[in-house]
Image (cartoon, rainbow, N blue to C red; front, top):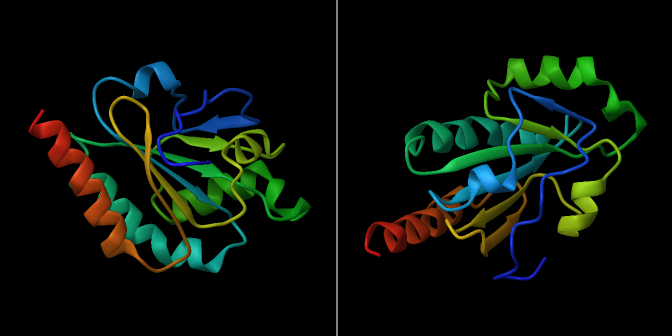
Length: 150
């Protein structure tokens, strides 16, 4: 997915955990962080406290949505996804993408992966991998500052 691309619709989830959200609900009020993770991804689990801090720190200014992207058949067990999500305090809505529909729409190949959309739904930042939370925070703050100063 290229920078400035519009946020895709969040259709065709295998399931939603922690409530369902739509693109229409996310756009127009505040920026959105969409992060891809997988139950079999060690880096995802290591990064989750940082993602949760982000979610909590910016709860009034930033939408956060998790996308569970399976890396193997074993990753598709919904009970396991629910269990790991609870263990790692993932309280934001989780789009379970067992059929890889949203993953393909994003053309995403990585977990963890982070997509930051501005309040108008334009992709402003993408990064993948376990490190780089400082860069992610910097990019989110830039998008938030633009919104605050608009």
